[in-house]
Image (cartoon, rainbow, N blue to C red; front, side, top):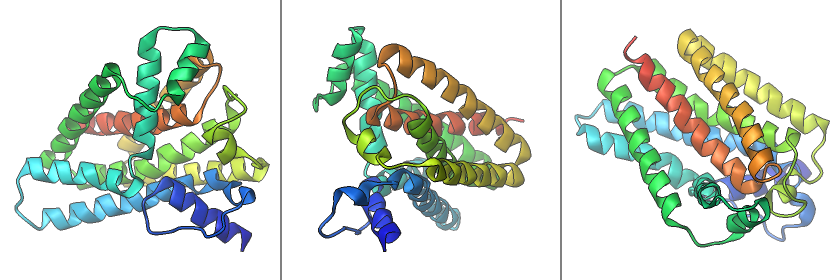
Length: 255
């Protein structure tokens, strides 16, 4: 029963599925990071299912790209994109570490966050359009699986990397986490990585290599600019990690 309550709490937090936990308690948020990849599985499955339906219809390429881009956002509610924008504002401020952490808490968004989001959206749609235009179904499947892979990696970074502060969303999500949580996330990551390599060996290996390099840079960046990871930087990791893998897959369409 406790695990079920943790699952429901996690899905209500990471998705916009109609799941709500009545009389939620503090212990219900424990171990929720273990279920973060499940949110990615739901988003990825919905995206790939929509792709299968779209291929049976002669729809304009722009419509298909926008629809497939919006589906994950609708399912997750853009939970991670908010963190991406906050981090972009903080990093673009060039202020002290304490002031950057304060910017992460600020509910307002700045011009730099909007500009970076528009750049990322343009890149995302362009790469997705290339995958649809080339009609490489296995790479689209890798794109769907990447939603699980990146979130499993994000969960690991949230548990293993030093935290910037002892309060906030990330502290709540990681409260009560044990070695078992790390093992479960690592197994989930390994399964997702294996699935990607089975579907498309070169695409899987290149995607994972890019994600690992990004994770190494992410660790250094967070430690230098924020003193560690936060809930917002985790959202940044998910957003950029997914976009990075999509870029790699788009490049592979020319090979």
